[in-house]
Structure formats: structure tokens, C-alpha cells
Image (cartoon, rainbow, N blue to C red):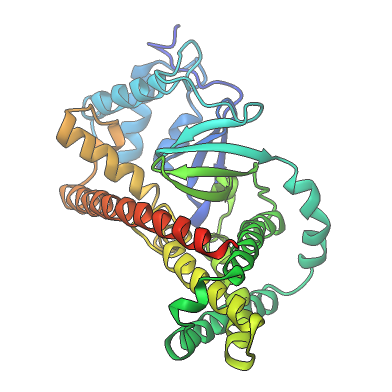
Amino acid sequence: MDTCTAPKLREDLEIIRGMDDHPLMFDPKGGTYHRLTKSAAALLRQFDGAHSLDELSALMAERRGVPAEGVRGELAAFVDELGRSGLLVGTEAERAPKKRAGGRFGTTMLMPRFVITRSLPTVLEPVARLLRPVPAWLSVGVFAGGGVLGILLGLYAVLTSAPPAKDLLGTGTLVAIALMFLQILVHESAHAVVCQVLKVPVRGLGVALLFYFMPLAYVDRTDAYRVRSRGGRVLLALAGPLSDGWFTGAAALLVLTTDGPAAQVAGALLIFQMLNLVTNINPMLPSDGYAALEAGFGLVDARGRAFTLLKHRLLGRPLPGFLERMPARSRRLHVTYGIVCCVYTVALGYFVVQSLIWSFELVGRSLP
């Protein structure tokens, strides 16, 4: 029997249980995950090269209580999709999988990426060993409570004690920019620490250009798909913004209680922090806020699905099988979300360009 008449999964594939106990298939070639239905996961255990399509159709029909002829077309489409993804023995993926390690450059989701280091798991494991024995309610409560309080305090300070524009035209702004880079490093490390505690280490720390123009730092937390609880996934996504909240609270306290150079630096830093927080929780971007909403509602790659549906509508691109079976109402919601994201991205691009021009002018005036 060959793969066309008796499909066989590659032996290196791993079927695991992810969030909400949902089955996933992990492909180590590209380090990617494929979401499965529970019935598909059960059926895939029979993809051993010894069962023909007729036998698999009969098994599928028996489980559903329907005639075998009624499921044969669905099974053939499923097998074809597995083949196009290169998941069956004797097949090749239509698109070569991205290497999981080795190369430092890559592009995903319209973001060129450069990996700085893959050593974070080794560095952070001693910290994770100290945190794992602490009751989750205690560590999460203290961390989240302090972060939220810091954000509220920062908002209050911005509304009541925001520094005048003339105070931003000085060397204090340059110091604030340097401190902001340090905060961004801590932000990404916070995600990585939670990953390490949950035993799904990050794959690397790097920098990227969102939509090819907006610089940002990131940690590759692809293996968070292995986290089985929604709460764990939500905390993992919000770890960065909550760590920002602690820094924001500290800057707000300085603004509210001090004068002179320290207050000027803290005031400039506070404005940067609040802008950063707004961006970080914006669901129109592949942000931490978007990831938290996705985890909280049990969604999977809502942005990717939305853009795939848009390409299908605008360019006539073929849809993968799982999107062809998506209910009409869900399709409309995804397409609407994709359109809103595109409009927002254009507006954001304009804002970023204007902000860069303003920043260069500001730095130029700050220099002696």
C-alpha cells in the first residue's frame, strides 16, 4: 500500500494535549503545531500505513453512525491536506518549513526577525526553580496586583502631573530612552520567566520589524501551545505588560513626589511607558493583549485566519480545508477583523513615521 491508498503519518510527529485539553500535532521539522479536532486525533492513530482509505472511512462512519459513503470525500480532503503539509510519509510540504534553530534571520506574520540569543532557558532556569514551589495564587496575585496598581498610578500621574513639552527637550529624555530599552528587556524576560516556570522554554530572544517598519523586541514562545490551562496562557501573554506596570508605578511615584532632574527623567519615561502599554495591549496588532484575548477565549491564530480569508476574497487564493469548513458567521467576523487590522496598520504607519520625525527633531534639540 502507498500513502495514497493507506496513509501513514511521519514517525517524528507528536500528538499532544494543549490548552483546554485540545489535541495538537507537533512537527519537529519546522517546530510548528497543527490544531486537531478530537475525532481527527483519534483517527490519526490509525494512519499507520496498514489501513486503507476504505477501512478508515468505515471506522470514521462507525464512530459517527453514518454510511461510509458520506464521509469518504471528507476523509480524502483531510488526507490531501495532510499530504500538502508534508505530514505523511512520502510527501513534501508545499512550502518548506522554517528552520527551528540555526539561522538567525526569518520572516513570519509580515515581521522580519533576528534572533539575538537562544540561551535564555539556561539563564532563567535557576530563577524558575525558585518560583515553582511558591503557590501560584500568591506569586500571580502579587505580580499582577503590583502591575495593575502601577498602571493605574501611572495613568493618574499622566493626567494630573504630566510634564510640559519644554521639559522633554533635554538630556533627561535621552536618559529616559535608555531606561526604556532596559524596561523592554525586562518585559521580554518576564514572558520568558513564566514560560520557564511552566516548563515550555522560549526558543529565543530577538528583535523584529512589525509590518517591516515598526521595531520591537520579542521572545519566541511558540511552545506555549503545550500549556494546557487558559489561565497559564493568559498569564504568559500578560507577563510583559504587568512587569511594565511595576516600572510605570515607580516612574509615577517619582513624578508625584520629586522635583528637578529626577522628576524630568521620570516624566519623560512615564509618557514612553504609557504609549508602550497602549500599543502592547492593542488587539489590532499581534500584541500581548491580542495573545491574552486569544488564550482567554480559546481562539487559534485569529489574525492569520483573518488575513488568509482576506487574501481569498481579494486575490482568489485557495483556502485550506479547515477554513473552507468555517461557518459563514465566523468567516464574516474574521474578515471584518482583518479589514479593521489593515486600516489600523495604515494609520499606525503614518503615526510611526511622524513620531520618528518628531523624535529625531527632539534628539537634535537635546544635543549641545
